[in-house]
Image (cartoon, rainbow, N blue to C red; front, top):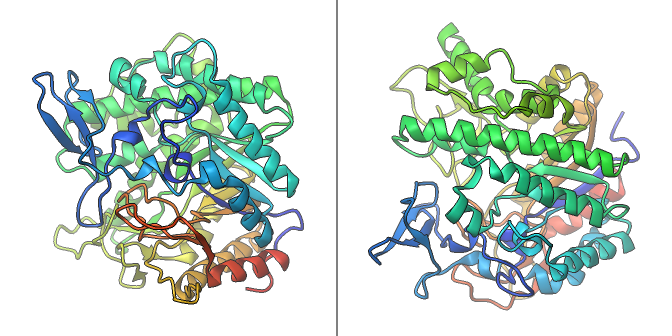
Length: 488
């Protein structure tokens, strides 16, 4: 049966990881701008100064004292400050995407380019014009923008002075920000995602050892506020332009029980409910699922609901389910089972799968399973896989070539899995592989962990020419798109 003729082939990026230009043309400082570089063995840090003037660093997801002040230290390296300079090179980069035949380009808007502190009455016109020019450049090549409104790019002022997403004031501030974008780019942007990997606020509890019960409860309230904000944005976006197609973006959590023990099966089901379906069900169905009560009880959570929250959730259901998918995990109740070891990896090791250098399982069949599960659960709602790819170390040869057969193999197998899912009856409408042009890794802050079809000459320490080179995967993906997934 193959891919539909109008299938949306493309790739994905995020503003903070690729744009650079962190303090130009009226842009404010984002929380990500005070996050240092790191590695697979060394965490990224958030830099701050205590009330006593002591300079400190905290691991990126660890809490920072409420009376501290975030600051940029001159002796620390902040990879997001320059990114890969998409801010100044977007025409060059979009031309390369067009050469591959992209139908869609997933990108995000930096909140701080539009409202530098998040609280201004009027938006920053220079920021609005930058994105308008990017959208026009995409349209020149008949590439549809798929725009993420908020992608890990919190204005620092709101984190520092308002307490971030635990403060319900952010719901109104985000709604205003989203409304501004919907109005400004009506007719230029049709496809929108409200909040990137919105469930990440609770996913993090798996990766931060000994997170306090108070912190976990705070994160569930934070997620509730995010869900309400997303729902309000969906409603506003539909009111401004009925043609808008607005989706959720949820970090994919999929996996298997390690054995056929009923205890492992139950533990795996609960894991999926807790980390994925709790969020996805709410965004698609407009209300918390029945098992939310169990989750709240187990975590001592008592959510603060606003007067209209339930109404907002019901009226702001998404038009499509979009998600990231990189790997799967195994759930085991055996404390002595061999653990999977790697960056943002949890659970037992799956003996039937291979693992990447960063410890992620390689499981294209898992994508087919996940797509089928979602399709049945959400009654054939349109879906996109909006992040998928292989982070690896690529070598730039002396002649300017980059040979990345490992990436081609990974992508080929996932394209095959999507085609099989389509034959299963799944309503899949698009695919945007992650980091289509090399960018700074969100998890490690490295450049050497590369995902792209386009190599950017930049190193972990920021050195390099920023020149662009086409990898072998560039030509493979070009052929894949030209043949609509037939020649892979």
